[in-house]
Image (cartoon, rainbow, N blue to C red; front, side):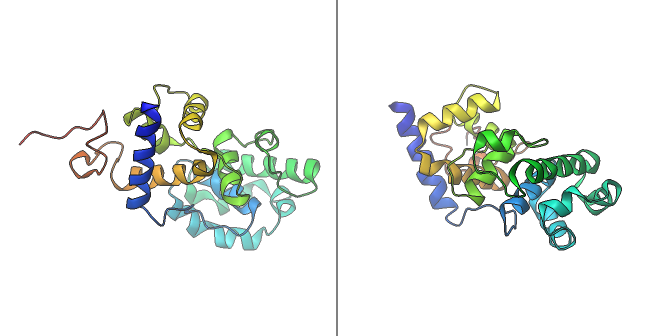
Length: 212
């Protein structure tokens, strides 16, 4: 119960600090969000959002992506980095969607993670932000911040996800990820956390604040 109260306070403060928190990947459909999420690996959302308008105009459907020339697709997404792996993941996942689901993105975790090139993190992004189905996205920010705040002792993303699911209500899961990501970008930065400026420093067991 003590840990749940701790989690509740953290969530409330995060909401107050980032009241407009939402998915920063621009998309108009589930398949666009899935592709944007694949592209966002080791890349900023800002860069992805610069690439995707032209990309989605050129390839408007899952079938169009599935049938895309692999070398041409690589060139189209080159600026997002790791374009070889990303192009392969996009084509394979879109072929699965065309073959198994008639071109419609499935809306269950089990079905999404069965797609080639789609992991649990990507699946939870699509569930939460394309379908409104609760899911906790454990990316590098969520993993780091949840451990620093004492919400989990695990390092495995699946175990962290399970720990957070026990502490927060399902209707809080999706926004929790967005809030932690916003906090990780603005304050709890990986290599230079601004602990002295953090509104959670009085309840964070990892806060490093120099004594005056």
